[in-house]
Image (cartoon, chains in turn blue, green, brown):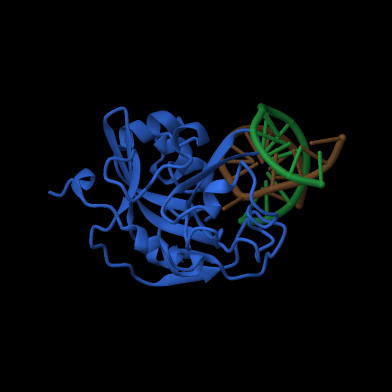
Length: 200
DNA sequence: AAGCGGATCGTCT
DNA sequence: GACGATCCGCTTG
């Protein structure tokens, strides 16, 4: 039986590419969160790419600010923002330093630590634990103060991503959701038929 | 089944 | 001072 927390995380070069490329490559990988010595894990089943300065829907579109500076930094770091007064959302920086691309993690399939996730989310319904960007941050104890700027390529980090050899099946490509600008770009990627994607 | 509005606050105009 | 890369519960059909 494999233990997720012992697997070497994906390297920084994995995140060095265009957001669209990193987004599709992240599908099927496993997100690991170490929280109070508990191992929480979920398979990434839905993501969105944000392109930076040329993408009106990106937080980086209007340039670098204290809030979004992680997006302009080197690849492989967590960008966590607080939204609608109550939710956190998780992204990974990609592209070389100075280029502000990112990937939003939109949904996970829970793999380990489900008891803790249920406690943090306040529900026992497994399909409601991590099937949305705000939901998964609640389930994994991810907030800006705890996780923004964390290096997800380091095995000592409280958040990282690993490859467990999972064979991704068909990938669906859709427009992004929840945005008002650049709404037609096909930059949302999800595993076909997965029960844990958002807005089913 | 689908649509609407409330919650709630950091960030930037 | 407005609004947002959301979620949930309530209303209506």
